[in-house]
Length: 116
Image 1 (cartoon, one colour):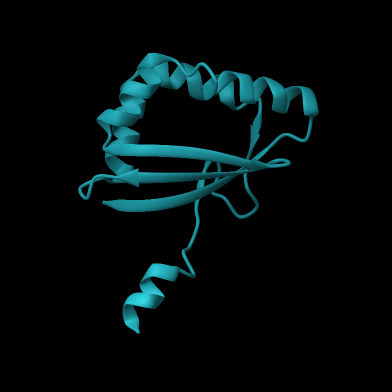
Image 2 (tube, rainbow, N blue to C red):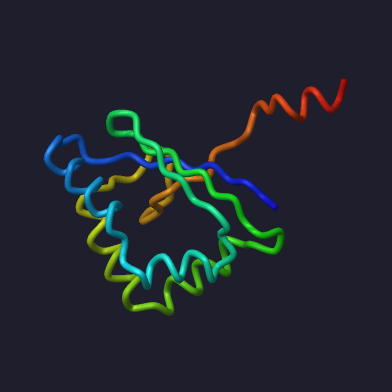
């Protein structure tokens, strides 16, 4: 299993943040199916003010390239992504049009303990 952590910023508007949260309480089944099909075993999103953190646990063969191909081939996922742009904004340093940015792991308690 692999684990990834990604970050994203939301538009700084309390009403939009409330709407965004509501969308994630009723994610479309096609979007959920596509996430699972791409090899994601579990996904959690946490929020601190306007900053989001996503933790993904994936199959060993998971790749972001394959996930992107699956996402692009689903009109329903594309519709979801267009709606989400109303609430999201690019992270500083993100590529043009890039939403979630991959974070670098700098510490793991279990890995440190295994070394000793």
